[in-house]
Image (cartoon, rainbow, N blue to C red; front, side, top):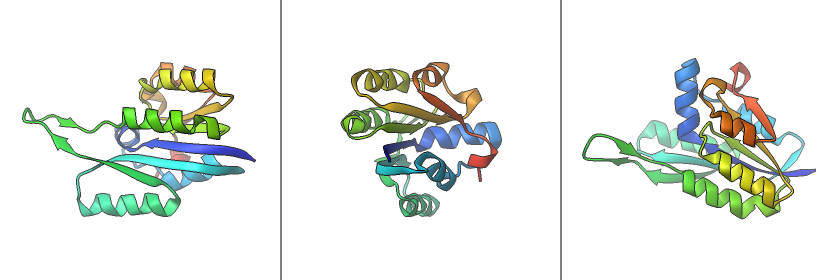
Length: 157
């Protein structure tokens, strides 16, 4: 049985599914598809914590599915912009786990992760899979993955 690790870029998935479909991503369907006939070594969902009750309920749903939820505080800058990026955290976790799994699954459309996928695939004998909204997933990320799974109706609520 293949060993798998899941990495969900919650903010990216939230905004891309909302923009393209006006719907929410179905993390339970994602889990079922990405882990079918595989042993889960680790599963992380990376999110921004604003501390509201809807977010807490969502985080608890993610935990009930099987994800370890990693949170960063929401930071509102004085100019009105916001900061809340998990790219470095996701990168560190993927590199740390790359030698322990056969497959790494990333849910994100962020092209910054293309270099990361190239690096782990060239360093370790693993396969990489990306789940993303086709119109909003960077072509470089799609090309860096062994397999790309388009987020469509079966992965939406």
